[in-house]
Length: 182
Image 1 (cartoon, rainbow, N blue to C red):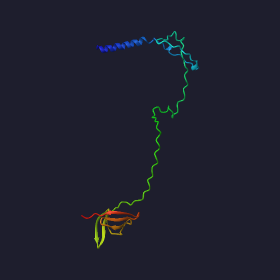
Image 2 (cartoon, helix red, strand yellow; image 1 turned 120 degrees about the horizontal axis):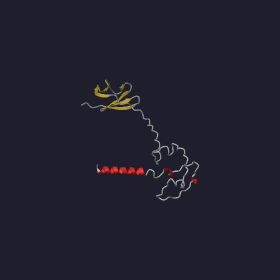
Image 3 (tube, helix red, strand yellow; image 1 turned 90 degrees about the vertical axis):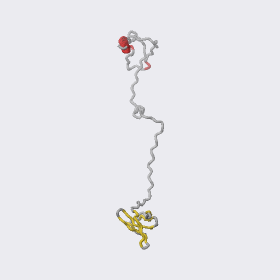
Image 4 (cartoon, rainbow, N blue to C red; image 1 turned 135 degrees about the vertical axis):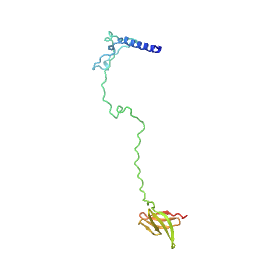
């Protein structure tokens, strides 16, 4: 058998023997006395201080003086909002955050004309009158100054590099670039 195992077994045997032999050395009766409910703290008798190593044995226990205090009645549990409600709740000394400000209503914006639905295809000059060819989806239009398109747009001017249109429902001016032919 290995020496380490032998030492462990002997130690365990020694602890077991010590527990077996010391079981009846101190009776439990000498440690506590029954309490009657009529006693108060003022009725308690002070016990004289005992020496450090002294023990009570069964014969001297009834004659020994001891202090027995009355138990206090249990109080009702604390309400939920007080300390007993949430044991592990986070606490902070900082003041609570202020409520968020009400959302700001955006200022009512003036209506804006929609983007132009036209693309310039080309430009021509017939008998001294400038004309611009526009495409709207699959529809082709030839317009000159003063032309009204679908009751929504009017051609105001045809310049060298831009076509000026007026969006009639809002009376807003919009420009469409004319690219030079290459």
